[in-house]
Length: 162
Length: 290
Image (tube, rainbow over the protein chains, first blue to last red):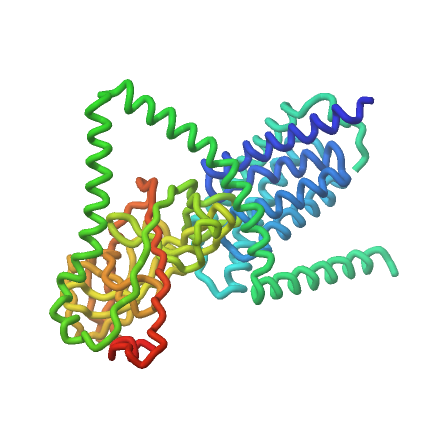
């Protein structure tokens, strides 16, 4: 009986989160506001829901972007790897760990752009991408904290084992 | 197999699959099309309603509260002014080149172009958008195709990079990967216009050392690459440097269009060339065109 309303709440919440993240991407170019949502989803329920969300977000990120397909898979794949490896060393839901993940993404962004532009023999705007990396590092933990605070209580799974 | 070996094998296999997919997509473009027809259009659907509401609210405020009649009249005059400036822009080069064209009448005339408007929905979106682009609210359903010229009433803006069903990316001429064949409006010296990044000046290369070109001269499209129609204004020359060790001039220029203050753009679609007469009654030009 409780499964249906919870599923609908989860669906509605993630749709609203995605819309807000797309608008935030319009206002702050070059920064991913969906990545904190992915970590939050992994913390709350690591399973098919996170997988579906990431698949949709990969298509969204690649479509919104203007490079050849490939950035988003590496971006979310490496973020998941950072998270899974990092939780062996840190408290998975701590703000400090999220700050470290943010720094990781901030460093990863210029590296991925450089690698993919080099593969296609194109010029990459180094200064702009470096600043985007700095912004990403600062934005990531703040967005994660806000999303965590707003996450519906009925969907929380505090004793989740990941 | 031990655990570290297993992890290493998974990483190597993952990398192999990723690079295979990446290379396959570079050759076929299937994944780019998939993401454009899903992700880009979804982003467009998300942004357009909000932007429409913003425009309506702003428009309501400006039209009905702030100087009602005067504002409407001003808007109408601005619209007419824009149309006239664009027509003037298209005609000015033709007028200037009439004498030259008269000598070239044996060649077939350039095919016509259809103009349609579009609204800028967003600039760069998300981290995978390191190129200097804008997103517009028209796509393949409106007949847009890759490499279609995008202009404003002030001059060339860029060309279509990728299309979704109802949304498209426009590569701006300021991007470091943009190249446009241009020539001086006055002295007709030809070169290639390179972007140097957002907010940076443009660079014109491959202009011969002894070619005539002056600061202040307007650079227009030469039409040589077959993407842009000939004669559209692109940039104005700011400086010309002559080097002792190069065969070419170093020319810098500033774009004519300020993208940051732009809300609407014009798309130029090449109309299909009418087919030549089947019988032997066709004129000399039609025969030459074939």
